[in-house]
Length: 256
Image (cartoon, rainbow, N blue to C red; front, side):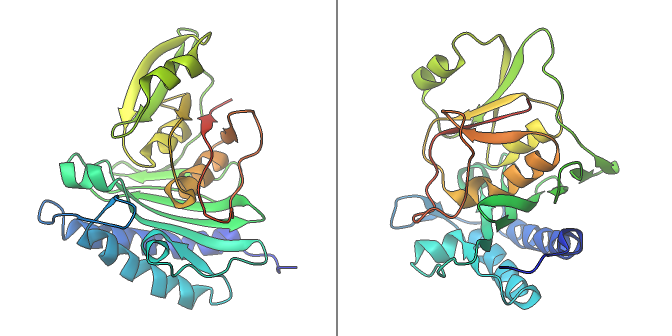
């Protein structure tokens, strides 16, 4: 059995690391082009620069905890995950948003324990925001106004604000999922920002009805969980991490 961790001490160590990685991505913002990985998804020099900051630091901080990161995984270099505890890293989530220059890309670091995200940091380098959380009730946002607690909201009477992908989506599947729900508005957003919008009380529901990988959402899920929300499979089951191929089923995130 794994010994207990001081999650808050770990979070204090990981936050500046994620922010440093965010600064590394900004050195390439507006100056880089993408190449295609084996699965056809884009990758840039910024992805690699961010990963080069994060991975050595995590391995020094917690040498006993394996690290699974998107770019290493794309090269077949993921460690075997055993013991129910591992880091999940997406060094640059929202590569298309990065290339489009809209600022909606993030750096994501999460700690998984027995299939659940127990710690997460999401950095939005283009605007300097940091979302973080490690346990229920601990979610915070640090932005230009300082640092403050964040929490999901109760859905307003006028209806739900539904958030969805800016770069991916199936309109017909989304309409079918939302049938019978009172929806006031739809808000498009890129990367793990969609989960953070729920965590900060600016949206209520995020259905994801397309392909994602565990590293895409783990950090945002941890922040949302710390803010009082949840992620579930479409049949209402618990959403877990550590699947053999790290591929996610369809899911939805919600504030209630």
